[in-house]
Image 1 (cartoon, helix red, strand yellow):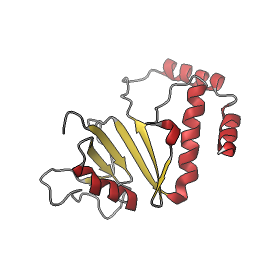
Image 2 (cartoon, helix red, strand yellow):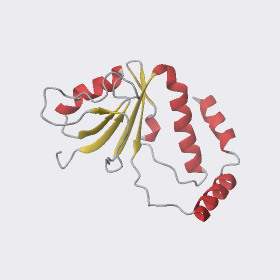
Image 3 (cartoon, one colour):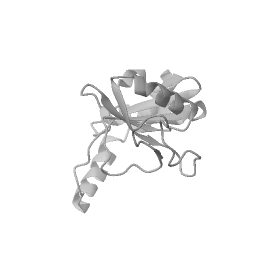
Image 4 (cartoon, one colour):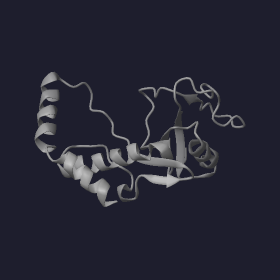
Length: 161
């Protein structure tokens, strides 16, 4: 990987847009696909992503714990655009409410609509290790306190689009 390349995990790699991203990625110096994730049972499972290249990247359904990247790209069919838009609005509303969330890459422009697909790109956040029950309780209380109006805010944002 080039020092300037951003490591990317691609979720939805077997779809039309995922395949287009994989076709273009080897010629780009700014990104490096480090995982190509597909749905369980997909016909490409275990196949090499780039059969004509010597690297060992294969389509997989599970992201191994040691696999890391700076960005997770999620590609879905346009039929799932409403779900992607709700995720984007929920992330923004939670952040506005002071809840720690995974950031979107260039949030103002998401989700992206391209060629019959909807795409979201999220910054990778490294976990901080095991969580104790008291910490989960604190998180639940914080979410309850800070998100009382989040549903209303999301509805307003979706309707404003």
